[in-house]
Length: 261
Image (cartoon, rainbow, N blue to C red; front, side, top):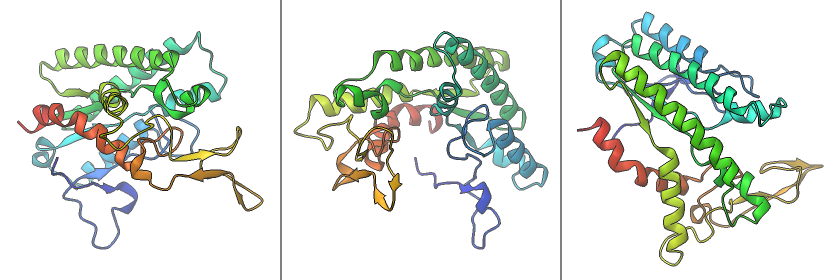
């Protein structure tokens, strides 16, 4: 989109760091609530953003011409299930999480940001962690149902917020549709595009109980494909660079129409 990567918050004081392209307050593995990693959740990330505004690092003019990107990929769900969350309680958890997300979006807007791009959840049932039981052949219906419910609740929440503010402050980036579009395009044209087996990751564990990157007694407990650019997924949950490129191309036209026109 012609926007350089914003500076990570922890690098803001490094020499020769440029802050004119914005700042990245995200931390890997985090979510709306506390997750399984020891890092700031979304509320605290907004606190860090607010402190920079209080220091006059960015002006009102800067904020008026800025876009805030809110990216959630499912870490809250991973933490919920790891903490013995039940399937029966999942819908209530989704509603409570998106209620808090709505409050966070209001707060970001209240700090002066005029436009917010909110990613919805990708098809969780298509992640290799879900498709491995079917030898990476088909997406899991139950996993995708969780994502669809999440996205429905999110859409209603964003619509209410926009109606309340009487302007389209928040816009949803449809990651669910973009992922499926990229994956189906590969599946329907295996001879013409890069990803011959789109649901299979480049980096695979050698057996159950291990993940990409694990080792035991100095021995790697995973294997890596020869060409990561030939795969849509890098590991059991993350797309490769090539995978993200395919998702971006599927999103490109809608993103441009929302923000650059």
